[in-house]
Image 1 (cartoon, rainbow, N blue to C red):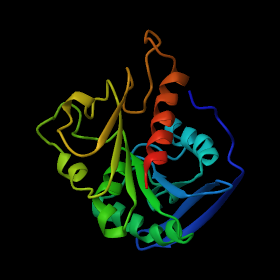
Image 2: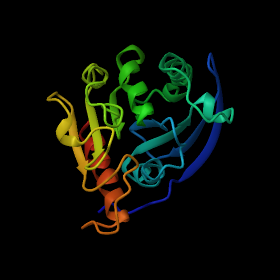
Image 3: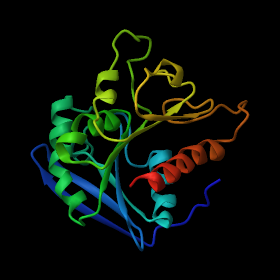
Length: 218
């Protein structure tokens, strides 16, 4: 299990994009070799348990974490805009993420993971981290978004809850990406009390997988 280590430095930055004002919360590594940029989903913010845990753990492993709030969240709106607007916001944020000159891993959870996949090649992302990738709307497996995941064009890690209604691990098609399952986890990686693992252990599955994967990136 990964030991949680607080980031050495945390700062907040606002960035103007064509979709509005975005906000980046930086969690700096002392000797960074990568930047991991992660955005939230359509129904939550950067306080999500997995995004917070990554910000606490990754800096000790040489990875600066940038938790990104899309413009619609910064503006206080409750509903996410269309995918093209989300992509426009991400494009506008990218120069701030890449300004250090370090390789940037583009990531996010749910809708944020879709944005990362859709824009990775265009923006020159080093890799993609897809947390709780929404393979399809709940109960509608015929409406697959697999083409977005398979089209990322860069090394990709999917971390998926075993009971995610947006797509269980066994539903994912074969591809060149890596997939790690969080046992019993739902779309937010919450696990029921009756599960064989605790909530802390479930979150550690996420952080351990990302630590190992980012360590393997060239």
